[in-house]
Length: 259
Image 1: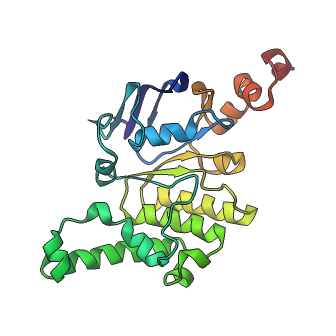
Image 2: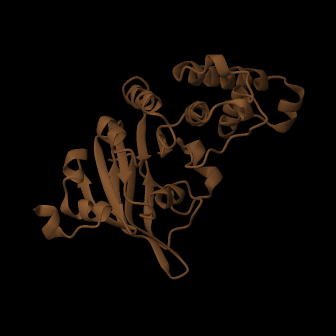
Image 3: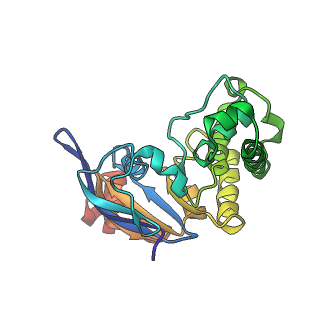
């Protein structure tokens, strides 16, 4: 059984069908990438899986459980975490505090226990800090742990957002354009980290990305979209050489692509 199963997913915004009959599986331990031109529906699929959007039709199953009708706050406790295309961090808090926010879905204490900091609240606090520190160490963020987000370079902020998602203890990590705005060197570091997430942490990664160098380096399989519809699915090389994908990206017809 696949960890994530998407079947016939569709969503309309007014008269526009942003996603139209998309279906795919993501296996446990796999890095699965979704590519496509701007407006292809890539981030919309992430928002559907995260339950920020309600699909017009279709189903989403995680670890055999139908999550299609769940609320967004019910998704993270299942073991699904995500980053955002536009960085969503608390700018006037430290890196460490932002990561601790990522542990919110793992809290099991009452507000009274948290207020008095007694009993299991102390044990939980230690577990949350340990998870945050592991994410900091994994992504080499030690020099920034006590620094305010507002004063950090863009590339470091991108890494902090990944760290916050990791700190939540996910089984499935959704990375929305992790290389966007990064330098070549920073993108290479992201590639190394994704490989380590898979190999050392046993994570499953679903990634939306425009940087085909990164996709080719880390993705086991790739799904190409255009105008909300599926064009091709397979290895990175297979998808990049597919005439329909070439047409969607370059605007050439099938006859020209085959020439």
